[in-house]
Image 1 (spheres, rainbow, N blue to C red):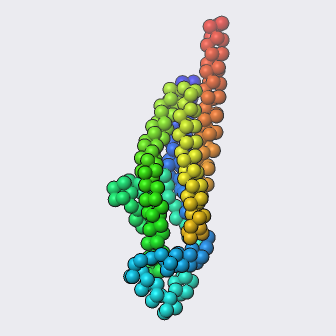
Image 2 (image 1 turned 90 degrees about the vertical axis):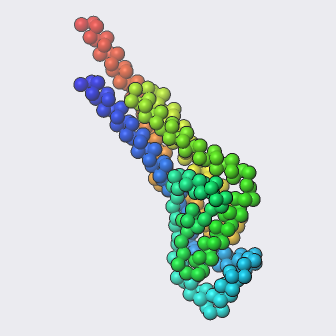
Image 3 (image 1 turned 45 degrees about the vertical axis):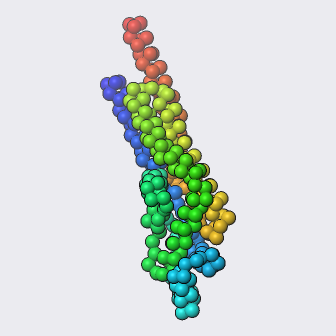
Amino acid sequence: MRKTLKWILRLFAVLITVGVMYTMTNGQISVHVDNTQKLAKNVIKHIKKTTDSSEVKLTLQFIEETGLEETYLKKLPAKLAMNYSYIDIYRATQNFQKHGKLTEKDLGLTGSTSLEKILNQMIVLEVNKRVKRSDPNVYHAITAYQYAIYLVLGLYLLTAVLMLFGRKWASLPLVLSTGGLFACLYELSQKTNEWLSGTYLAPIKVSLSPQLYFGLIVGLVLAVVWPIGVELVHRRERQQTTQAEQK
C-alpha cells in the first residue's frame, strides 16, 4: 500500500511537471497596441518621408485625397493584440533562416483594407530592416534560440525521469528549464520594448501573459516542495524500518 501511494505521488509530480512544461512553451507573449490610430498615423508619416515605392505613394495619395484615410483610421479597432508562444517564435525563426526575412504571416499580421495592408507591410519592413542591421548577432541569437528549446524539453524530460525514481535533485533541472525559459522570454520582451520605444512603432508594447507567470510560480513551488516531500517519505520509511527491526 505504501509503495502504491509513493508511486501515485511521483506520478502526480510528473503530471504537474508536464503541465508546467506545456504552460511555459505555449504561454503567450502579447504584442498589443492601445492606440491603433496613433500607430497608423505614425506609420503613414514615416512612409511619406522614407518610401521609394511609387505604388505606395500613389495609394497613400489616393487615400488622402479621397478622404478615405480618416475613414480607414476610424474603422481600425481602438486596441489590437496579437499573441505568440515560444513555439510560434521558434517557427518564425525557422522561416527566417530559410527565406532570409520575416513575412506578414510569420508576424501574424492581417489586413482587409488598403491602409491596413500598407501598415502591415511597413511593420514587416521595419522589423526586417532592424534584423539585417544586426545580421551576425541575429543569426547567432536564432541558432541559440532554436537549440534552447531542445535543451529545455530535455531538462523537463530529465525532471520527469528523476521524479519517477524519487530523486531529490529533480528540482535542479526543473528550476533550470522553467526559470531559464521565463528569463529568456522576459529578456526578449524587454529588448523588443526598448527597440520599439525609439521608433515610430512606439505605440506597440510587448508583455508576458499571466499564464507564463503562473507556470513559473507552479514550477518553482514544485521545485521547493519536491525535495522536502521526498525527504519526509524517506524519513518515514526509515522510522518504519527501525520499528520493524525492534519488534
